[in-house]
Length: 224
Image (cartoon, rainbow, N blue to C red; front, side, top):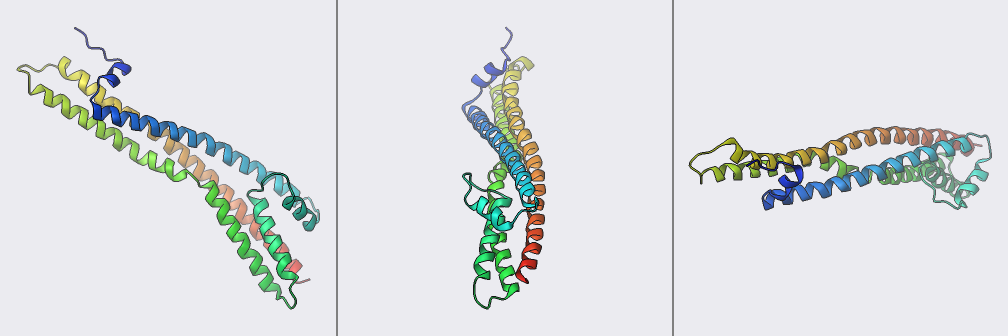
């Protein structure tokens, strides 16, 4: 009699603990793919917003007019627009104070922009640790299910007088499914984390460069 070694049969006939491990890995994999798609859209939107704002910023228009457009815009600002809005608002507020020191005004604007930059980075980095955790732990979780399943298969051999490959093969096969599911959950998470982390670093470098360039412009205006 030939044993049914289809994936569905191996999963349904696995031990309860191995099935729990498989279910955990399946849920984690689904959450991981959801994070991957969301993060992909988020970073694509952030790059597009950075390109659009840089075009407006370097178009040669008045900074006060740009600030009015950004601060009264219908859409929620993000990225460079948030950094610019926070810095220019603080710069204008400090500059209106009597006897204000130009360097103190500039340093105050830079502090506010650094805080805004930190908050934007926190938003962009959201859920990235989850992908890193899935990528690093899923293979071990799957391996635990495999070890447990193989251990049960060999324990069952102790109750028979003559052991054959046909008797132990289904148990080992269903145990190895847990390892396969662990890799299925881990590989996309690792690839996604590495790719998004690289894209995020490039975006942060753009934000830092903009902050320094804008600070130079504010420095010139502060000493007028």
